[in-house]
Amino acid sequence: CGSATMTREQAARVRAEEAREGAAVLGATYHEPITEDLCIFYTQELIMKLTAVVRQVNPRILLAHSPWDYMEDHTNACRVSVTAAFCRNVPNYPVDPPVAAISTEMAVYHSVPIDLEDPFRNPIRPHLYVNVGPVIQKARDALACHRSQKEWLVATQGMDSLLDSMQELTARMGRLSGRFQYAEGWCRHSWRGFGPEGFDPLSKALGDLVVQS
Image (tube, rainbow, N blue to C red):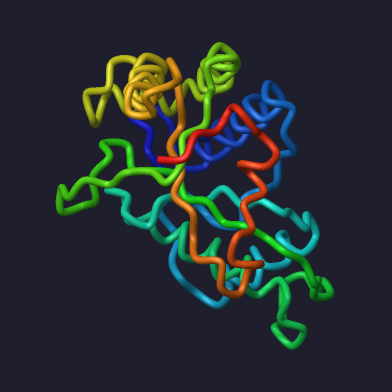
């Protein structure tokens, strides 16, 4: 929705093109959106659509928004994601389009809010830190694809450099980790309904690139 120079339809088209470009830089698979910007609500319709995607992808790791973000759209995205992940195993839960339930183990990890604070300015600290130093340039290249987002943030929130802000945040995380120059912080969701209590596939997959807080 946000654009000072484009119509709503133009902004949606441009943002989608930029998202595809960013996904290509990362070697990621792009999925078409299931709703519009600022229109994410905790509804049956969105949960059914996202559960279908989760069942199709069948991930062991889900990286979700923070439940404590400053932006309500982001926290709603978090809630919808967690419920969709939970419903992947529920055979009688209807999804759109229809996809059979899967019986899998999954771990959910939440990103930390941008200022490391909840909406009431209480501090939030990650459970684990991931070393992103080796891929910091690729992260900048992917983020640089979101040109219209950068223009919008400059106009509305005074963020002169989206790329520098990202790198400064990862540098701050790196200092908090006590080990890495650049890091991302993640909080582990409860294991109940997702997998065994000690299931931590992210740490297992990344090995020395992860340090627990």
